[in-house]
Image (tube, rainbow over the protein chains, first blue to last red):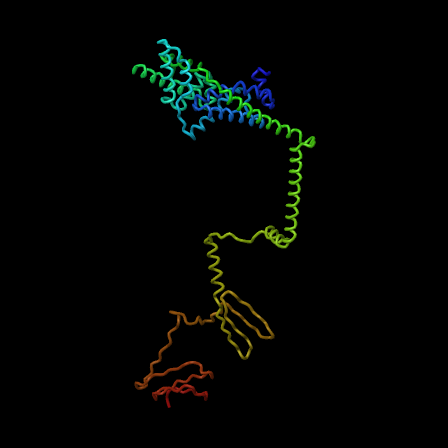
Amino acid sequence: MIKDGVALLKAAQKLDEEALTAIFDEFAPAIYKYTLRLCHDPIIADNIVGDVFAQLLEQFAAGKGPRTNLRSYLYQTAYHLVVDRSRHNQHTAPLEVAENLHDKGKTVSTQTQIEERVLMEGLVTAMNSELTEDQRHVIILRFLEDFSLKETAEIVGKDVNNIKVIQNRGIAKLRKALGLQMEAE
Amino acid sequence: MELLPKDNKVIDLLGQLKKSEEIYPSALFTNRRQQYQKQMMDIEINAGNKKNTPKSGNGNGAAIATISSKIVETILVVVIAAEAGTAAYFYRAKLSEILKALATPTNVQAASAISSKEIDYLNFKLIEATTTPAATLTTATSSNKLLAMPSPTITEKLSNNGVNISITSTPKPNGNNGNHYGQTPKSERIIDNNGGNNNHNSSGNDGNGQNHNNNGDGNNHNGGGNGASHNGKP
């Protein structure tokens, strides 16, 4: 089992079967989760995962592909696929999966947990309705996928300063939306 | 634009959202993994064929297909070359004409604006070509000399069978400049008392070198041929 990231990448470039399988097992669930947060459809998310790894194989077979940061490369590919698909379909479904996940914890009924749950639902709704596409991508990559500013800039294809501006504006929008909700309650 | 302290609440909420594990459904994951492995095998086979085919070619289906495709490609190239050669043989005459036409430079002159010097030159040529010399041949019966006065710039003497042809461009005036306006000498007018009759004075050479002046009878008779001079008196 190849554990070192660099060795894994080098082995995958040589089309080593074990390395390629290890890459899939390690990154496919994360890519699926990221894609599901963006497109909100498990089937589409699964298809995008398939496309991401198919492209990775083609790139390796052509002697191309990532040289250093495999994770950023996979997210970048997924990001472009999601953006292309959303431009074609204009699919804007709510984050039902995330909402369903919160439904799993219905047994918890303390006042604090209820407030947290309301806030989470408001956050998810605000992310879907208030943020622009760029802001949603940046916030997901920065705070849900833990990418750095530089990595996020590489994935989205923008300048680091631009990413900072997009991120802060998105956070401000979310704060405003949650504050309004809390005031309404 | 920096993050504010009040934004920490939003960031905390995002962190909690991150913790919510969304599991890749096992059925989807397994199916996707199988497809991925199949793609991986295809690519490895293709890559292996690329490596092995040129060296071994040992009974593999893909290798055979590659060799046969190369053979077909070679045959096609040979057939195309033969066809081109046959066509060139049949149309060799036309091809040689075309090649000659291509080899020899074309004598097409580009049209350009004519300069003023060229226009002057053309006008000069035109004048020179259109002035036909007004040659007057005078045949002298006694000396067989032909005198011609052609164009004003050419002076030649031709001798042909004892006949001298003298072409003088600018004849010497010899005191007779011809009739020019304002230079013609006025003829002297002779007034005779002939009783109011018409005065007929004809002077000149009648061919015999004699001058006849008939006067007095109202009739002028000229042309006497006896060599006598008559001066109007009977």
